Length: 251
Image (cartoon, rainbow, N blue to C red):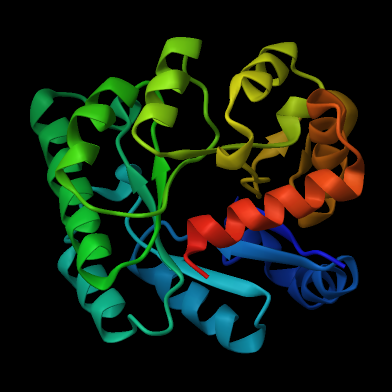
């Protein structure tokens, strides 16, 4: 049986803490592995500790653009000192909604470039936050040699999607694709070998998910939708997505 990968979830978030034993048990039963991304130094440490508890947790450490005003050196040192234990670097990226001026955005860019440089140095994939900043990110990425670049929760245009494919990025889609026609159209336009699935928990989703916190258990529904869009069987789509995830992770 193939493994289903959640390419982007914040399992070390406090909202999941009370239910973590059940979540990890369920992941084992459903054969789900999770790329557990971090926001800052504290959550990066929590992510590493969680990965020690379960091999189903693939630890991604990094600094989210919301936290770019903080000193990145402690996280850089944490990643460097644990490079053999780290599966990837993330969540990193750019987002102008978290800054009030150009100086704040320049700080985001500086932190993002430091994270990319580190990923290149230790040869790890990255999980990138790109809300309304895809053009700026496209201008930066070619300066680095990173084999696995994920633009998580892709929300760009078809033209930007094609640009993502041209430069070799992976893109991921989450529970919103189950009910969003726009997401389904973007998914159908994505190169099959560059597709990944995610939940981005603890984000909450509406419609059929009733504003519940995203769980890894949402993934089979996303996979079912994906198989329908692709015109493939569930198991065939699962096998394809497992290959994609292994390629992204370099395993």
